[in-house]
Length: 346
Image 1 (tube, helix red, strand yellow):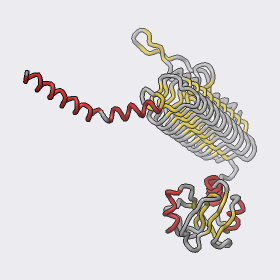
Image 2 (cartoon, one colour):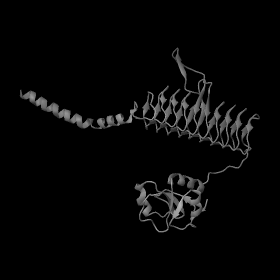
Image 3 (tube, rainbow, N blue to C red):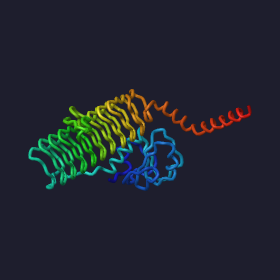
Image 4 (cartoon, rainbow, N blue to C red):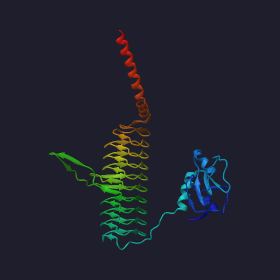
């Protein structure tokens, strides 16, 4: 999409300093590669050097952020929050792909499916009986949706996602390709030298404004519901076991694994490849750092690291101490040699 610099500034709550207000802005780019006709952002002084040589037409910058040697022709878009203004600019200049509101003839819908208005259903999507899909949803090619599923308004489900029976999904939910919602939880009892499957008869409930990454798996509850709270964002390749309760606005980064029956409180962050044992509570606003293994409850507002995970300050001190072990062992060996010589002299 093409906007003049003045139009972009008005839409993004910014004022123009320098440059040509009538200049055409056609796209957005990062500060190291932006070219003529593009807009970028500068929010960290470490990147100021790139602005001096930038060929961009415009750059979002915060009120009071001082920069020198601005290239001739580059306009500053001064605003209160350049990161959010830039996010808005990206959305304006690179609008999301839309889908015509129709049902592809290759789609397979049970006769008891209930559809809202302005819905797109792509080729080879399969939708089971007694399923309800709300207004404005986009179900892309190859999606499988089981029986008795309820999907709210304005959701987008990308190709080859699978949504099992009885799943409940709120409004404005995004589910990326390959995600599996509602598969059986991993529950077995060991009897007579074999693993006996425990029936998994619960479901998954996903609340409004949740985004679920590609190839993520969320298991159904064994008896009740596995729940994902409002506004939570789940990255690719995340495994969420049965009966978990995930709060509001939780972040789970790629590779996270959460065992069964955990409670992840509001605003918690689980960084990449963190692993959570079963029946663990993660407190509100707590941060589990990357590759940490959590076997015990994490108090609200704390940050933990390591495996087993512990307060990050303690874990960092331990890491530093471990790094000094080779030198310490060398010193111990020298001391042992000196002691041995003293003993031999006697």
